[in-house]
Image (cartoon, protein in one colour):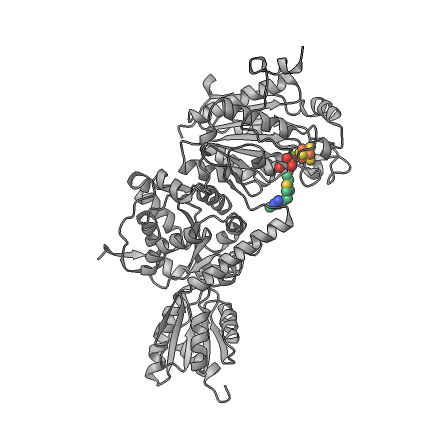
Length: 366
Length: 262
Ligand SMILES: Cc1ncc(C[n+]2csc(CCOP(=O)(O)OP(=O)(O)O)c2C)c(N)n1
Ligand code: SF4
Ligand SMILES: [Mg+2]
């Protein structure tokens, strides 16, 4: 059993980074995630593990520092919240284009614009459909508890290095700010220079020894024929992620006639809504995507023929619902897929979720 | 005397550095980028630092610098080379990291990153190719374009009422405690090339000695963008750019100017 603590989600991100052997963090303050860097500065991991922590002058600079440091083959991350992640989007696109591993955490707040500092899931599209320019994908993990904030840091790095691709933890202000019991991971040693060289020496830039060709990290290729080959390689990689990395949690789905589909904070609300609905005799389950990209469409395909309908519950105007519809369509099914959500930083109540289920899916004719 | 008798190792007075890749560059004839690439290659070779050097290429005509100098390279987004270099050097403090940037890249879109990298005293060399124009995108005004100069976006000449004043970035960064060596050079004559090489060498040595940021501006020509022949461009630069961008060292920490303890 690891060390048990009562901690804030944001602080756990920092603690998990130190413990998983992260080499560097670059960030810029923004509510509701500033505790990540504050905690790191407090912990001073440079003395303990040698991890570098730097407050950058902007999110633009932070993500480009991540690009540089990731290019040297090390485990690096940044965290921000929605407006800051918009600023990072160009850099994330470069990182994806140059095929570098890194972790970006988005502790979402409501938008558009400066919006609100209250929790939101309105950056789903930005996270899973691109955000920055060009045809790229990130692995997107959606924790729904402080425990998962801990667990997904290491997992995100593992996946980022497995695919040499940016990975994102897409969470929100509620999970970032809430305190829960968490079992912290054991310490992993940071990679030594020798290990970095062994693992990543074929592409990383840390000075060219006479024994190898120079390594060049770039996303540029002016020859269209070659660029298309690069694009095909990226797409192949994304298809591999879809084949191998779909993750989800299925709660009371076995006998369900209806399914909530929800991630993160909305999934916590839906867990309670399942209880309330079941007390009323409604057979409903919860499918909680853990990876938003790759979206867990295989399980939806499997479940779709067995249920009467889906309700996608989100803290936005209806974004993931499109992926649920696509998955149901791909399964050759025509079950109803409805949406219920709140915006502006409001977390829906379990009661309103059950009511939405009854109204949108259980009325005569549906 | 037969030519074979002349071509002997003992008669060799000059050769291409082995760090310079044997290839045709995409630079226009007369462009300063090629000369500065050559100097950097020679210095990396002479100082024996190829194995510890990481270059950061800009967006601009030098975007393909990585095709010409045989070292590890990262190609940065437009203006972000100092941030990328920061990321590399912070996690690899014993490496020699340099950012190579044009004036649009460094003084316009990347003005924030360069100021903050210099202000933190990042232990990097910045090579700043100031040709007073956006070469790569076809000759638009840069923040460094001098007054009255005609560019494709200032067809009647740069007018400070509309476009502001040419920005002297090097003077600006010399004010910052994080910089250890700040100089403005050129590379249009044999003598200026030699001086420029000495300045670059000093900048590299300062980084190897962990003295903070070294900043070498090279007042440059872009004969294609300026629509001049290489010879005319050199003359135009001497007559029009040097008065506004006077050459020489602006700061040398060895001579007592403040340096950060970063
Ligand atoms: C974000 C972004 N904006 C604009 C461009 C287009 N662009 C490419 S190079 C360049 C200007 C480069 O000028 P400079 O830095 O002076 O380099 P030079 O070519 O003169 O050496 C611009 C605006 C870009 N690539 N990325
Ligand atoms: S356009 Fe200007 S800066 Fe670019 S290669 Fe030609 S001369 Fe050099
Ligand atoms: Mg220029």
